[in-house]
Amino acid sequence: MSAIPQQNPKRREFYDRISRHDLAPLWEVLGKLAPPTPATPCVPALWKYRDVRSYVMEAGELISAAEAERRVLVLENPGLRGESAITHTLYAGLQLILPGEVAPSHRHTQTALRFIIEGTGAYTAVDGERVTMVPGDFVITPSWTWHDHGNPGSEPVVWLDGLDVPMVAYFDAGFMERYPEAMQPVMRAEGDSRARYGSNLLPVGYTPQSLTTPVFCYPYARTREALEQLRRGNDLHPCHGLKLQYSNPATGGYPMPTIGAFVQMLPKGYRGRPYRTTDGTVYCAVEGRGRTRVDGKVLEWEAQDVFVAPSWSKVQHEADGDAVLFSFSDRPAQKALGLWREHAPCDA
Ligand code: GTQ
Image (tube, rainbow, N blue to C red):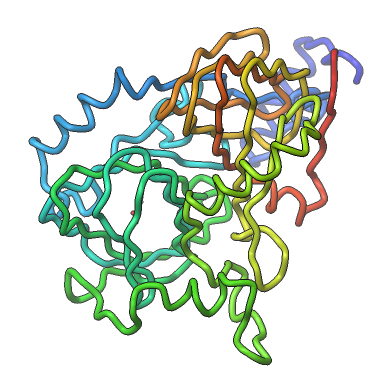
């Protein structure tokens, strides 16, 4: 890309004159519009659960789930403050639901995922079916489905929310509605969708009804069992350790059209090689401790911490003991648009 052309009085006068007609010269901005490699204001960042947990709990004394509608502390990327964004396309937050509370039913075109960080006994209800969640469970709320959360248990429950809020805002395609009551009626027994779609079976003649998986909970117990079985094979990727992607059992594709989710085991002492990918990625440590170098910045994580690696940053994982990382990104959206790239391993 050539350098920005020199300004001179004649050119500046021209720019001023055309500006009054809502016109601007491309040659002044072309380098910024089409950089040689992705340029993002998103920066690497880490939220230590140990440091932020007390604020999440304090929010619980400040406002009820009913009043807040969703009692969430938004994880704002330091490079995107005020935009409710953890990457340019994704939103993340820590949601708290206290015993006895209900976060009232609503629906929106934004797709949501939950990754349970602390506590048991809370449920989320999606389109008439409740699922009770435990730490490590990965739960999906498809676009435009009614959802409410409740905690009939005895402990505070905290989960990581991941939504495509900034992406939907970019497309100006956001709609939202509140359900007339706090709780939607329960139409199906708990476990119904897992039995129907999440048991290596599908209803006979089934054709997918939406772009989102019909299984809306991926229990950690089953994920963990798969990782444990596969680690014995010892075929580790040089950058990712043992990494799997969550799938829609009806299509084999990503569970959601805009957000992909992944889980990886890094065995004790794992030292990954660096890689880059265009999908800026949000990680949540599930087990163990280690560190991830992101463009030279060292993020020291342990279980329950959340961190983010921007698009095309150089990412390198290390684990001290056995570690498990959950992650999500906009990979399905980028792939659908033909934009996704990776470089792995990369030492540059
Ligand atoms: O649980 O429905 O973190 O609507 C942000 C918006 C959670 C939710 C968020 C939401 C939700």
